[in-house]
Length: 370
Image (cartoon, rainbow, N blue to C red; front, top):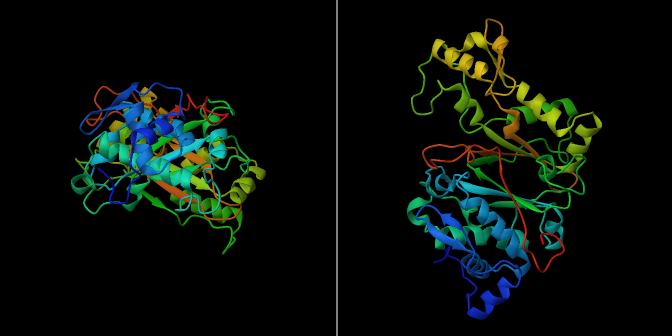
C-alpha cells in the first residue's frame, strides 16, 4: 500500500540496513495504531521508512514520532479519519536535527530536503500500512496535500534568542525530541520582515490577531443561542480546547527578546489580548465560566473576573506554543490544532497533557539520540 508515488522496494536487505540505525529490537511493539489498530513494531516502522526513501540515521526520529502517534494521549484517530483534512505538525528539537541535516531555515516547509520529506512521508505510510488509514475514504471531504509528508521541520535553535521548545518543556539541550500536534489549518501571512517592515507594535498586534484556535474559544453570546455541537456553554473545554502554534522568524524573535519579552511573557501578553467582557456572555455561559473559575481549571481566570466589568480570558497560554524557524527575515506563521492531547470520545481513557513530546533514543549512527 502506498501514497500514490513510487516507493523504494522494502527488500530484506534494505530493511536490515534501515534497522542498523537503531539499537532497538525489530520485534519491539510500540503500540496499536488507529483507526484499525494495527500493531506497530520497530520492524514495521523500518519497512515504511525504506519505502519513504529515508536513510537509516533518520529511523530513531521516525520511531519516536510513531511512539507519540500510538500513545493513547494523542488523538491520532481524529487526525486520521476526521473530515477536517488534518495533517500532523511534527517538530524536531535537539542536536540530532542538525546531524541528519533537517531543514530549519530557508523554506523549511518546502520539498527538497531529504530528511524532512522522507521522515514525514514515512509517518504517512505508517498511518496507511500499520493503522490502515485509507486516504480515499478518510481524507476529509476534499483531502489535504500536506498528508504526503505532514508539516515537519526542526526548530532553528542556533538563531533563536530563547530556549528551545524542548528545553522550555523540561528536556535538556542535549536531548533530541519529536513533538506532535494536529494541524487543522494554518496562516502563513503573519508579520514579514523582508518586504514590508513594520514597527514592532504593529507586528505584535498582527501576532495577537493570529492567536486563535479552531474552536473559537468561549465566544460571548449574550443575545445568541448556545451552539449544541461545539459546546460553547462549556467554558473549560471551549477555552482549553484552543491550540495555536506561532512560528516566528529569527529577526522578529530577537527584536521581541531585545524588548524584554521571554517566550512566557510574550505568550501571556498575546493571550491577554483575547479577553472579553463578562457582561457580553449569556447567563448559561456565565454560569459555566464561574464554575471553571472556582475550580481553577483555566489559567488567568479568577472568581473576581466573573462580575460586571470583569474581563474573561479566551485562550490558555499553556496552549500557545512559540517556536523560531526560518531564515533571519521571513514570515511568521500560525498553526491551529484540534486539541489532540485532550481526552474526548475519540480516545477514551486518555489523560490530558499539553503537548505530545517523545525523547529520541536508541540511535546508533548519530552522536545524538543514543
